[in-house]
Length: 171
Image 1: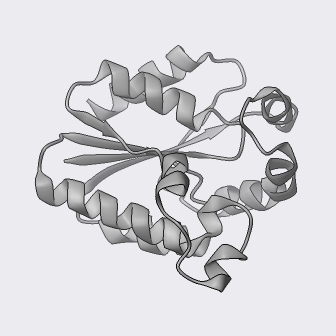
Image 2: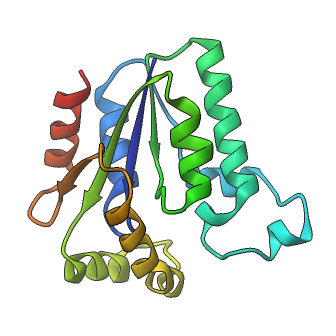
């Protein structure tokens, strides 16, 4: 079992890259963090009114952690790929640190700030205000954490090229 974290700020291409990888590798489970928001509802008032970005909602992080544990225990997949912005200590503790005994690959997708803002503006189904509000916080967190992660500058790469680069590293 291998866990592949596809990390990065808003607009870095996490979900698009993860989808391409999931289509090209057999026996892989794509676990989309964004989809959990539709499946799980807050358990308390503080969960409901907490930070606006999903990665700050502890109940969603806990639900993702539990889903990953269930998939590992089930043993049905060789790979779990998770596109998510691991941009706070709770994500780091509950997700990255929980799975230290599992073979993990952590990729952080980056690009120039100008390109990231262009992508945010052009993305469908994106809360542009939310992405811009938390952009700097996410960028700073990722720069100061995860020294062992592989950082890929996607500024001059298309989605397929990024996916191929990651596939070569995890196979």
